[in-house]
Length: 143
Image (cartoon, rainbow, N blue to C red; front, top):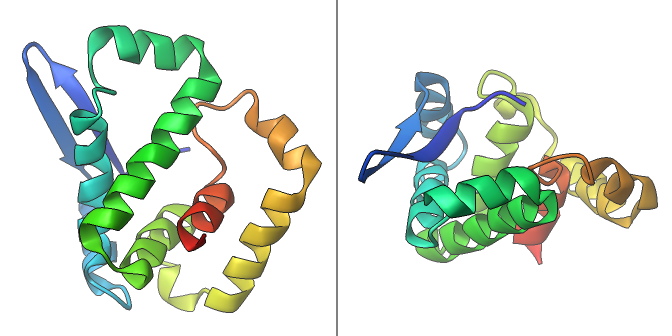
């Protein structure tokens, strides 16, 4: 999993970092407001206290908490942009990268997301991850 964007705390300041790939990819997507979803997701981490030292340690140790934090940040970002298509586009770029995003069959991606969520092995795999599978995140914002 490569970082396209992240929020962290440096000293007493919260910092949101976006790569040029995610910015260019979001702006070139079917819905440029996808960038708002990505920024909203990272700002949600800050607003929800996920960047604070104790929470960061807890997220590293308690992986289910880290996964829930990601879904919470997605939900806040979705509410902020108030645009399901922009939210979907933002997650699609995270799933396949900005270079391939335009070539993805959206219906197939949704079908795959639903399949992943319904698959018991997906949950098992996620137990060792700090982030939910991107397909779970896609299904979450489509609910």
